[in-house]
Length: 376
Image (cartoon, rainbow, N blue to C red; front, side, top):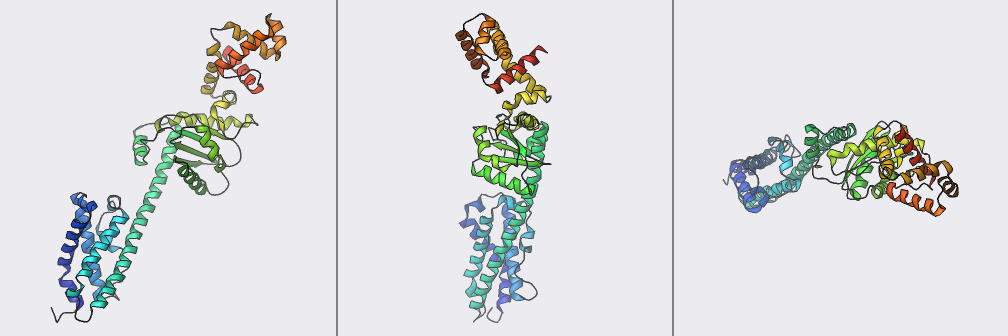
């Protein structure tokens, strides 16, 4: 081989170099040995393509630039899911090491340094090419995940829990997420994608799984890993635009999130009827406004919450009705022919049983509405 040029020597040794590279991958990397046979064969083809491309470029650097992604075109796109970028770079390093170790026997006399420099140049370019391939794959997956996310949020808002939702939930990695809540509010000014990105970043910062969608001027978030909905909503509410931010009830998993979404959306629609509503506001706090707005579920919940505990307690029912009419403890006592302390005790029992304190004007409004609807 003494009369052959470096390029000719490389071409003759191509098969040997490929075999040596595969043997080195087998010996050096656990992840390669753990791959299925099909993926290992694809990795081998990529390694062979890389060596072949280097030899072609070295023999004619002008017509075949080293900055090429064609090396990775031999493998299927799904290979980027099986092999991480770090592992691909390890593969590139292994192949380059094999070529570099063979430099003394591959280079023509006096061209050893030239070959080493070519190997370094090529290794840099092939690493950039690998990064480009993985960036494209990540961008493609990101676009697909965004569409999948929008479909899942839309299904949650419509209350659908069919098989297609299950497959999409699994694809997004949400099948094991527990503690889910839906928050609805006005979208902030500017790009919808910016609002969604900000919400996802903040959700990740707080250790939450986040799905979100902008529906017109409405920003809806589905949050997983939630323990205290009020605490989470308080931490994130600045990410919504001006106006009410309504938090649905906590549900066990994403398949039950339709219930939280219905409550949050109904609460958001009814919130203008309570100008002093807190921000964020639990959908349960808006039961009266939701009931007036025609939310049958809210009407049923409100009536049950008030009337069920008082159903077998006629004295408490009578006291509640009288106090709402009189709005005065002594006047109520006179009307019922009882001592004011008895009225005071009964009002305390009503508050314990229903969660509504009739002395508070907001709670009194809720109870009056519930009693009125119960009579209808």
